[in-house]
Image 1 (tube, rainbow, N blue to C red):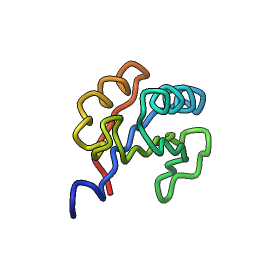
Image 2 (spheres, rainbow, N blue to C red; image 1 turned 45 degrees about the vertical axis):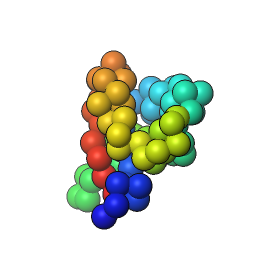
Image 3 (cartoon, one colour; image 1 turned 135 degrees about the vertical axis):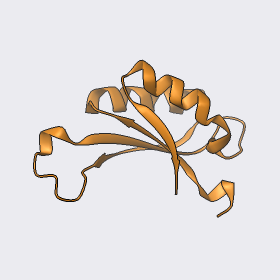
Image 4 (cartoon, helix red, strand yellow; image 1 turned 120 degrees about the vertical axis):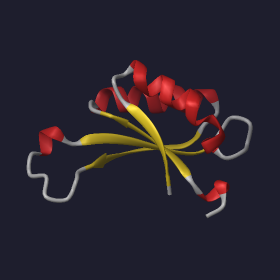
Length: 86
């Protein structure tokens, strides 16, 4: 799969933190910064879901996967993590 088709998935535990970080990333020029729930199959406690910010394009106009270390560091500030996904 080409790098340009892949996204960095920034995963946080708190919805407010995810919304806040998504807003910061948009201001920095990342996009699309879509926030959605990540409920694992079989997980029945909606309170324990994680929140994922999907980022495909960096502020430089290239794939966000090139900025994964920076996004991972930001995620760690919120107690989360980042990983390259599809």
